Amino acid sequence: MRLLDDILAARPQIEGIRRDLHAHPELRFAEHRTSDLVASQLAGWGIEVHRGLGGTGVVGLIDGTLAPAAGAVRAIGLRADMDALPIQELNAFAHRSTHPGRMHACGHDGHTAMLLAAAQHLARHREFAGRVVLIFQPAEEAGAGAQRMIDDGLFERFDCDAVFAIHNWPGLAVGELGVASGPAMASTSEFHIRVEGRGAHAAMPNLGVDPVYVAIQIAQGLQGLITRVKRPIDSAVLSITMIHAGDATNVIPDGATLAGTVRTFDEGVTALIEAGLRRVAQGTAQAHQASAEVRFERHYPPTVNHAREARIAAAVGDAVLGPGKVIRDIDPTMGAEDFAFMLQQRPGAYLFLGNGTAAGEHRAAGHGAGPCTLHNASYDFNDELIPIGASYWVHLVEHYLGTRPA
Ligand SMILES: [Zn+2]
Ligand SMILES: [Zn+2]
Image (tube, rainbow, N blue to C red; front, top):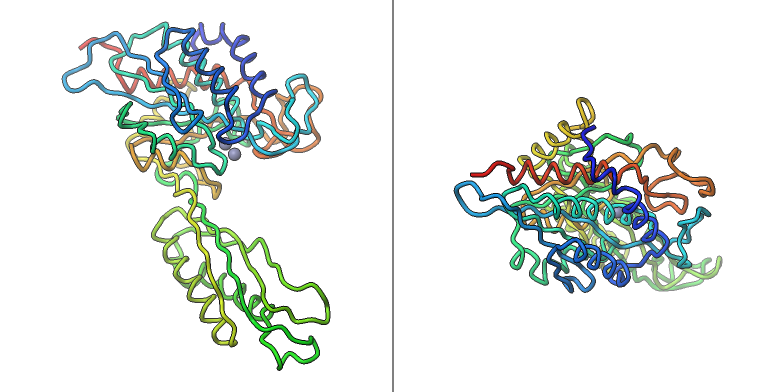
């Protein structure tokens, strides 16, 4: 691996910051301490800092000292997320969360640390032509903080020709990089279906309209949308995760509620499923003399990498990590990610950096009994990734912006 010497030398310092962030996790849009820490570190390294985008978001600007090649000055955006999750940490090591019920269980403490380490290096070695826009965003976890920063003028104020983000990835070996071309993560939508029937004595169903029976017919029908309505080659999953009705074994209730999630890699597929879901719910209810009210909410769009930027990211991975370490066309996952909103605005790519196996060989004594996987109470970010991710960021910047004077 081509890791940069001064980044390796700074690892203890940055690891200290990472563990400090881990010990002080903050939930979406409340990343005040984290935001202060990021801003003061950047400023201390002589980096121009802008605050307040998306509430707690921080933007740092590093201008290169080389004259750009013919044409406009180019800029590359590098994004790290800063928020934690509402999870009670089960690890007992020294840097465990000091905030009850909150935990960095997705490694955003590590993403922030990797980008800080890269920023420190880039501020000292400005041998590139163009601008680096460091984007530290709030509220990736179900808060759409990326969209909030965009709404606050992120790309109007700090234009970027391309944007990139890295997520640590348990299950990939340390030193491996996964780069999907096309979809990397799914869209998320949620639905709620309220079936209204008419309550009755359980022994006399003919005197009412049984909403439980109707809800079960709807639940069966919805899976047909996945197998019969969309093209078989288009991926999608529909999971009903909540069914609520009734309070007694001998009473048919008045209503029943179904709710769940739909995930796809294509907004057109989501639209097909939404229309079908309304049709099946309302048509099925009507067939049984009940009624159904449907609420369908779209959350994150699919995270779709742009082909050119994915190629660039993979090539830089080859150069930094060595041969055979970049997994091109890695399978996308049905998880979701709000970097999708940034990729709707600018070309770019979302990358998976190996965090080691789920066994978590890197974890210190005192870790929880559960697997070292994302959103698990026994997870911890692997600090080995700090010099790898930071060196990768620097090489990506230099490759993308160019290091030779015009
Ligand atoms: Zn997460
Ligand atoms: Zn995450």
